[in-house]
Image (cartoon, rainbow, N blue to C red; front, side, top):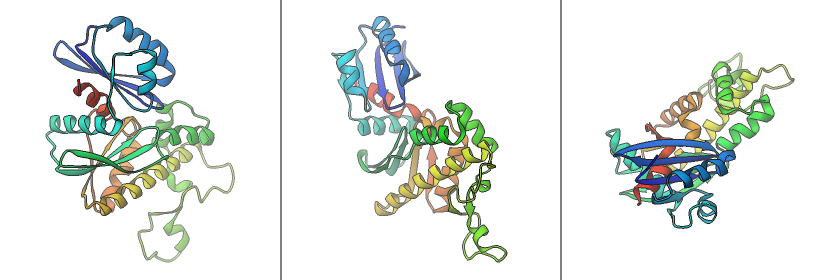
Amino acid sequence: MKPAKIGIDAGGSLLKMAFEEQGQIHYKSYSIDELYSSMNWLKMTAADAPIALTGGKAEYLKNEFFQNSRIVPEFESSGMGASYFMKKDGLSYEKFLLISIGTGTSICLNSGGRISRVSGSGIGGGTLMGLGRLLTGEKDFSAFVSLACSGKAENADLMVKDIYAPFNSPIDGSLTASNFGKIKDDHVSKEDKAASLTNMIAETIVLLSTQASVQHQVGDIIYIGSTVQYNEPLKHLLKKYTSMLGKNPVFIQNGAYCGAIGAMLSL
């Protein structure tokens, strides 16, 4: 491996890397638990390559491993990366919200190429795995997503139609009245708990995002981040609820690497 340049997005859960080698761009990701082994390997195999860092642990990586690297502000690198991927996907939006769902969730406004953070939440991938482990005992991300795929949130959630039954509800009966509101004992399956948690996270993120979109008069909402890229149930719900509220949900290929590619492009 002899990359020409490297971008690293060091977050709370994952290390994501974009690097250019022989004119091609490649992507890798590592668990934060692999930080020392992966970064020491990188120092040995790409000692002369210029490196740009972004994310919450960028300063730490610079001090510990790459003293000559440059640090790119997280929201700036995500914005550059999103613009790069959108161009590759043939997408063009003058003004949009960029929702980065990582360990937590950041909500940024991109207007005419200028990006600024307008909101955010501690609800994100860290919530999914932390609370998910408490609810189901599952600590592997892919396995948890599989549980959610097989479950039904309405078996754990109290729906609007449940409250108004046996009569018709004045609003959409399939809407959630109370997340986990049906759980009275321990007979709800792990699959249904996983589906309910995924639904709660999707609803929360969409509500915050659409509120920001109304405030800033934006119709297009772009979702990025590892939590959504590798999570079809969450992606489906984000799309469903965003569309339900009259906004345009957009998912871009390789969106999990927006920060890493944005950092690399800054070199």
